[in-house]
Image (tube, rainbow, N blue to C red; front, side, top):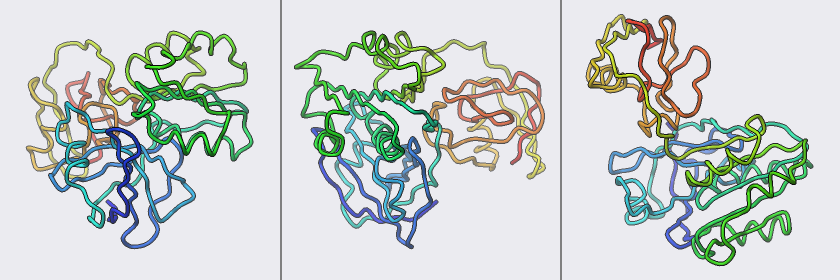
Length: 302
């Protein structure tokens, strides 16, 4: 974890604040567009937020937090209680949504989904790529960073407030898509589903804030052999692998507990995981919060 100081709190839209976190001991860990951090809150909750500042600024991170009316305690605490000058611990950046090289890009953002897209647009334009952003939201007042985007990128950016212009026509955007372009999309689930229906799967990259509803086989019991600790931990059908390890005194870092953030990644040395995450675990890795085992035993590097 890295210690930061909350340098600024700015209201950037209705129900959205921007937090600028300054490294308490100088430079922070580097990051690339699409990365996110875990923010450890003083109320013992940890939440994940996309970095939306400039990767070239090694002294500060910027994130933005929308106040969710159904908050589980994270966004509510940020909006009601966090104040300038507060020390806050954050993780090193992780990137499950990397920007791949391409000569052209179409960026699609919905609401707070602008946060990972904003540094992508900056990086693409700095690299000389042809880049366009279509940014949608419920209303102009609820959409953060619109002034910043317009002043920096001009007609590269199309802002569509749904109460004035309706939803973006993704089918028309797909019909006019250059064969050299990649599409990056982040936003609410209906927007992601529409993008998946409109654009070729091989050229579309999306980031989800919530897991896709899916059906899995019934949970079965298995054992986790922790190679470095020399411990074997049983996992019952009623508990997650993450919880079983925690209860056994072998805690694993965690954040979302929904298979979308990647903070609980473990290296698998033997056995066959049953992957239930939404971000696509790399070969030889798994996410302990949601994934389980197809084999009776898993050996992990823990």
